[in-house]
Image (cartoon, rainbow, N blue to C red; front, side, top):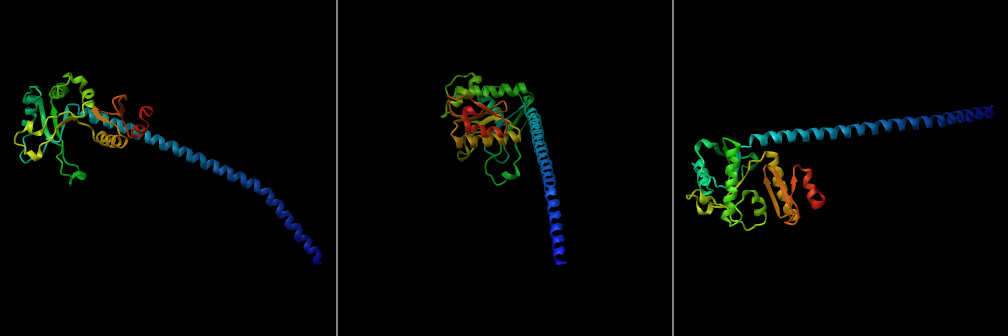
Length: 258
């Protein structure tokens, strides 16, 4: 009896083993199918993520274009010391006289300082001065006169169209100073003043990063012209435009990166 029972047990185990062996391939196939579905899902999500990043980049570019359009009549004056009861309009008229560019009160909409950023509340440096003209035409004439006057001040070609080319090759350039625009500026507050395009916030951050990257890599020249950021390793290298964050990585490769 026990022999028959043992035989039944062995037979039953054999059937179970055969059944299991038949189910394993099916199980493997189901697992493979599930993994394929997961891979496809991950691929779809990666594509959606890339599409979203592209859409965000496009929106940022549109915002930049809008902000640049809003600033088209502006010039930013940097490094002019802030004082109590300052009269910034008189400073602008003094600068106009210095660069031989006569202007009327009706040529200026407003002159004001940029409100300090919350992150800059502990920084001592003076906030930039924004000069808003009544038209882009007057703004451009003023800016070009400034460039020509600065070149003449340094004994260089007065053609403002060569301004950035000249200053990139004149690292000992003399700049107009705050005291030239306001004789009451204390000596310890005097310093070079700079006129630039009024950049949109994101572009200004990018410009700061480009300058930091340039110092890190030994680039000689970084500047802005018509709201475009240019970098140049040295005078033998052609300048390149840095338009977005990804362009900063290209600076590592020099000529080959752009």
